[in-house]
Image (cartoon, rainbow, N blue to C red):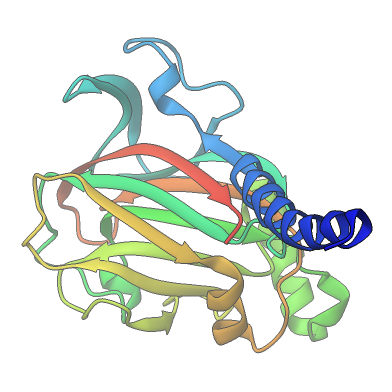
Length: 248
């Protein structure tokens, strides 16, 4: 074996190995810790970059940083109330489509029914909002969204996914929000089995967007967490741990 052949043979082995290693390092490095709640101190004000978005005429869900099982998390409490904790955040879902989070609920809402406006309550939900161009929508839809944004601002998306913990519908059920067909509700967790326990979730938001809207996802514009009981008048509490986006 000549020196040149030896060198070529070595490079032929080394380069694919190096490329595989570097690809793994890059994939591991690309992560958006949108909700790095575990870095905060319990009792502090809301996490940096997050704000509460209230609904007109509705008592607001309360959000607080608390320590649970040795980790700082966000606690949500709603009694005949509704509100979201929202963070604007720009993400390319083509680059980092894998959404991971962990959550916990204190109990289900017996009278909730996501198929009807009067039952649109959950103990925990997570919104992923997309920067969908309004000009792609019919005139009536564009007008509705613009009018709604005069009241609620940028929290009215032209397209969004909403992952919920529901008490009735089976896991992986997908349906339109009772108020709008611009928000696709996905049941990520269902039933009482995990109540009072931390549950880890993982979703591919790019795949879920394609399944819901039949097209490639635009950039993600923000994320929100919520607990709401204003439709049924009940009470609920839930907790969110860290939330992140990463590459496949």
